[in-house]
Length: 293
Image (cartoon, rainbow, N blue to C red):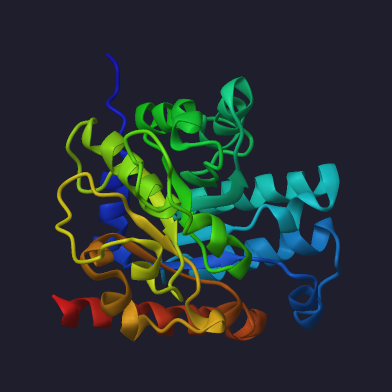
């Protein structure tokens, strides 16, 4: 008898309901490793990552390892990342691999298989992905995510200033002509989600910076959002300046699907203070969400 795979959007909605929207970034910057008293090495990022998992489990529901900080140490770094991913999933955390991969054809399909295939050494619950070559170029990972109960978060409007001129550029031809690149990505993702079975959220989400004026990117946050709306991974809270209290103002009708992502603002609490910092921020996010409703 074939088992039914739970859709990513439904699992994400369950995490929101049970443990809130806070996502703790696992970003072992060299300066953080040093301040934690850890070596800048594969063993250091392994210990750092496992400590963040332990501090988050039972206090928040989502973690986001930044893959680059592990892969800089080569095979040993990947081995460390495999342990951190497995430990996080074993702890019941929803894991978003911040890999930001992107390509075309069989190459991008292989990236999807790496992070989204059940049983893969680098299996996560979702991954970040770039669609510079068009959302159609990532169709294979989108379909894999949908069939495997996994998720994707497509870069749409990011907070780095270098991206602004591209993401605000206007599409010149095709069905999205006249839209900004950021808005065209959102419309393509939403279209894909709505073509699938109805769930609280779609399997394919968006990365939208919490520090941005989304209207300036051509994104109408007042528009009605229906079932299968794209969930939003929103980096920028904490150290980068975005405040949880501004979530509804920044994201408008998209607010119901926002994942509040924070990394350095929490991690700088150090190994002794991280658990308390995560618990405090998680309680704050849940309290503000309850008040909003």
